[in-house]
Image 1: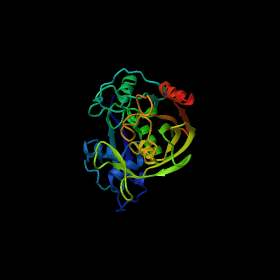
Image 2: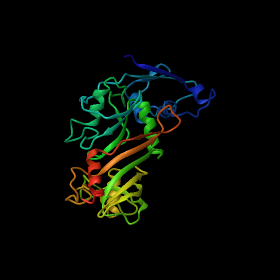
Image 3: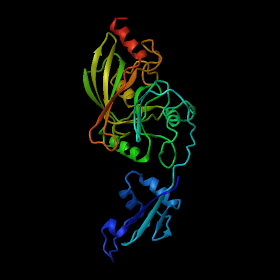
Image 4: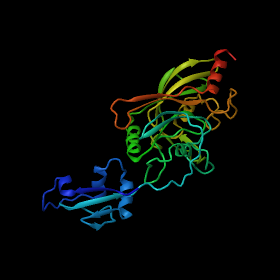
Length: 316
């Protein structure tokens, strides 16, 4: 596969007039005209010698452009990923040339990390779609949002850089509606409500997150409503408006009703017989690239969690 070459004429693109000395940074100019690429990605291409200015190689992203300048950018084909694809079962709910929507099972890690170098969702998708265009110059799917290892349900991965940028913007602008089902110990203070509690790294336990005091941490907002009430448990529908690490688990624990089976932020000994925490990403509503109307995807509650609810409904 050969390089993709894109050319620009700064005078035409910028609307500058001959003799106009008000220039623009090269990386900013390219970022504005190539929204499918991040600024850092374009800065890397400039640094690595893939951009010429009036026929001469330029490697400084901060180079100021002059009226009439001609810029040529070469985009190399994606390099083979350092990740090794693994043929693992995938419950694919939707797929096109830009993205894939998957119902992730509990127990599967999304991305390789220390201690989890195989059996991940990203590796399974890479094996499923080996000809993927890739992200950041590498043949690998782009993770737009994450689910904890023991959280099941909907997750979306991008197949190319354009889709990755589009989907990231949807999440960043809070235009994505995410609905989770959570079974909690006890009950929240009110049947429905809103939690506004900042989240940050726990200073005493660096592998954990924590609700932070005012003025610290990152903003985190969740809304919830009660779906069913049981003697000692409550089934909640939770709508996170932000996407902080462990947000739902922390916010319901902050309300005094931790998720059943959450041994990190809840009770060390689960109050019900369950092999995982009871949190499931049930519904996702989002506008996909090149579409105008939002699509809604849904993942049914896994049988193991349905079984827990059946026992509660039967008073067991």
